[in-house]
Length: 552
Image (cartoon, rainbow, N blue to C red; front, side):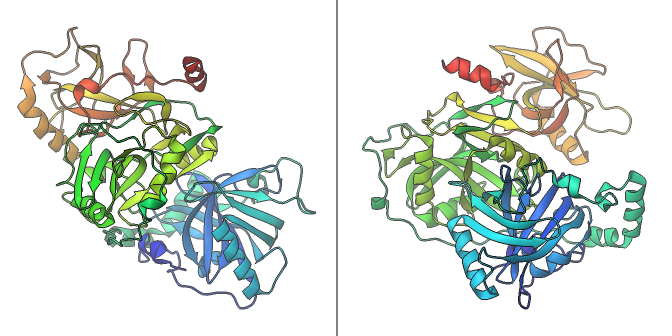
């Protein structure tokens, strides 16, 4: 078992967590459940196997009620010594927050076999995606199963078996937590705890960032003769426009839908014909010179296909980070990946008219194991729990897609939905106000969206900027200055305004739309260099009921 990913994510000069080393127990296998208050409260469920702790993040915690099917996302292996870890992971580190042991004890297979045979059975269960085991703890006792969701890379369900230790009553892990838990401390108590750890905080500031490129490891390709491909040829002209999703604000679970992670990067189409590679944006702008690492990885794969995905940069927490992607040319220390979630053609054959679930299975077989070009997996049916996991990890959100949906290039469809953790809106920068006080470059951006051919004012924002972004945006705006307002209606500003040609697009986080059609509490997130101004309209979020009625 490898602890390389565990070690890569952590700087042990700045965190009290144990370094990644294997170290099995002497005779009996162990388990531990750690209650972890990071961005959000969750439970870490860890089982000893082959000298490490196989680990799953369980948002709602384990249950003694067999009716509860708890979503459990498999994460990197942890070292054996982590079973005894409790304490504070300081800010700036992966998983920053408080960790406490909620339950621990002995682990066995269902037959209570001796250790060597038990490990063999547990190992086989993980490979099969159906891991059955017995726990002997203070809170958790009896038989359990971890069942891998179909076609998912790391999503499992944690289920209690019906036995003498099971309950039919409602079970909440929080009800079984000690009242004096450090996670439940008052604000003043937490401040005191932080003061005790000042020395550790100073070490964080001196620590070097964690990350770096992962070398390409070519995998073994499955012969395309083994793939069942349609006879129809792909005739769409290059560049191909990707299929687009509608936005909605309601999370739902449905057995006819699949759910993917929403990546925070640049949407990209790759046309690969052996070593001839074309990588470009949704608007046909070439990415080949910007991300040669992806192009080289596609060459190594040697595939003949048109694939759809997202170019992302992963930060030290393993999350896609758009700002780091925008600055990737200047800073290559973070991991660049192309997360691929659909395939339009293989060997010149059109796969767009196949159901999505079949296209994804073809794509899974097409792409070998590779650290740069990665298959973007999905889970089935459990959208609500999957979204809760995305919120727990403070990710951008999830994608919901009809399992039998066809692929329509350049079309926005209600069969693909994006459900975001935060409300966001793309906006056209129509001007900027003069800076006040010590602020430089500009005060606020004046924002608009297109309704038909007219640019409509939706407010302005002076929040969300730092010194670097103020300077960078200011440099981009100055050459676009013009005398006339791009709005047909008169717009009042609280400071003198400079109008610009409406070409730049940005993304804004906000709380709600006001009655007069403006953004309430808008905060600048980033520039969207991959979006054209004329494409920016008001996000039309629909509920599931509206979507169903539209389809009837």
